[in-house]
Length: 480
Ligand code: XMP
Image (cartoon, rainbow, N blue to C red; front, side):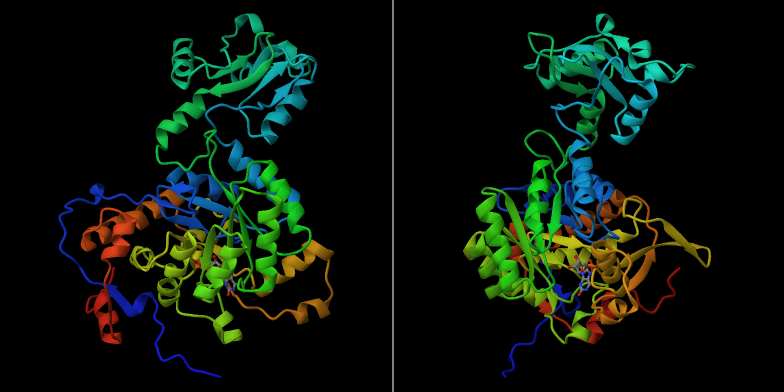
C-alpha cells in the first residue's frame, strides 16, 4: 500500500489566471480541434455514448454544430447500425445510393418506403437501373387516388432535368435553381442512375458551415462498443454503413479486456479510427495507445450520474487526471477526451486548458430536445430523464435485451455504479452548444489564446480555497 503525496484536483479546485491579451473579441479565436489526430472538429464537444444522451437525432445536431455524437451501445446491433446509418444519410455532397422504386411498385408501398427511409422523394428506375422518373411530395401532396402504381403519379423522365456524374456542386446548384427543382439525378452514358444531388443538401451545407463531415460530405458519427465477442461483428456492421469512429467503452479501460479489444479492432480494420477508455493514468493512456487507439477517454467516476467513487472507492479527480494524462498522450501521438463532470463552460475551458482535445458531455446535453426520450412534467416544469449506464435500470435493461424477461435473482445481482435522475428540459442542443462555446471563447481571450493549443501553452491554474469557490459563484444576492 502507498499514498500519493500530491493532492489530486478537479475543476472547482482551480481557476485560470487571467493573462495579458491582445484579443479583443471572442470572434478572433478558433475552437478548432481534433477528436483523433486525423479527424478534425470545429468545436471540442462530443456527446456522450449514453442511452439518454446520444442516438441519431443528437448525433446529427452535434455534427451540424461542428462537434460529434457517439451512439451508445445498449442497442441491438441492428438498431445501433440503423442509428449510425440515419446520421450518415442525413446529408451529403451527393447521394451515391439514392432510395429507389420500380415504376410498378404500388404507391402505398412507395409512400411507406419514403417514410421509413426519411426521404422526401424516390427516384424511379426500371429493372436495368435506368432512370424512369421521380416521385416526390409535389407529385403526392394534392393527389386523391393512391390505389395505382408509382408510374401513375411520378414525374416521368421526359419532364425531368438530370446531370452527368462529373457535375460540380456549383453547377448542380445553378441547374436546381434555374429549373426550380429539388432533386437532380445523375446519370451515366447509358442513362443509369449513379447518384443524386438535392437542393436540401446544398442548403444544409450553407446553413451549417462548421459541420463535421467526412470526405463525401456526410455528417461524422461515432459508435460505442463493448469488449464481448460479438462486438467485432458489431464493429464490422457499423463500419459498413460509414461509422467514422469506433469507441471501445468500458468503465475500467486500463484492463486486458479493453487493450485486447483495441488490438483486435486495429488489426482487423486497419486505418479505422479508434477511441478507447476510460482511464485516468498516463500508463492507461500509453497502454491503449500502444494497442492501437487514436484517442483516449479520460475520466473515472467524474460523471454527474456516477457513483463509482462511492461504490468502489476508486477514481481520480478530473483536472489532475487530464494534466497527468496529457503528456503521455502527446508522447504517443494520440488525443485525449475529458469524459464526465463538465457542468459549465468554465469547466469546459479548464478541461481543454488542462490538455484535453475535446470534452464528452452527458447530463449537460441530456435535457435537450435531441436527447432520446420524452420530457416529463413535475410541479409544472418539464424535465428529461438521464441515467448512468451502470445504474440499476440501465443494467436491468441491458440484461433484458440479452436474455429477455429476467428473474428476481438477476435483479438482485446488480450492483449499480450510477443513478437515474432528471434534468431540466433545455430546448435545442444548438442553444446549449452556443453558450458552452461562447464561454470557451471568452475563457480563451482571458488567457490571451487564439487557439486551443495556445490556451494549453499559456494556461496557468491557481489553486483556490472553499472561500474562493464561494466568491466565484453569485453571492450575497437573491437570484431571480
Ligand atoms: P456527465 O457529468 O457529463 O458525465 O453527465 C457523463 C459520463 O459519465 C460516465 N458514466 C458513468 N460513470 N457510472 C459511472 O461511474 C455510470 O452509471 C455512468 N454512466 C455514464 C460516462 O463516461 C459518461 O460519458
